[in-house]
Image (cartoon, rainbow, N blue to C red; front, side):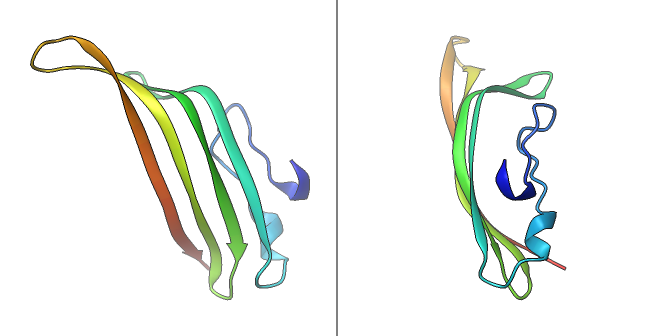
Length: 97
């Protein structure tokens, strides 16, 4: 990925943001995420994970904003039938240094 950021198959949601530390305040970069499946732990598999994030260099650090969405197959505790649940998360975080 240009600019020094890398998304690896081993850690598909890990970004190397070191290149932003040398940029001027206000510099930003957009990243798109798309994974057909992501195993979080043995019993937690997210499928069709997708989203985007914008990383911005601020005077205090690096600000990230974006969203992620995916699906997880679960079992109803009442009737024991399986169903697919949509998971979504909004990202708004300042990592200061």
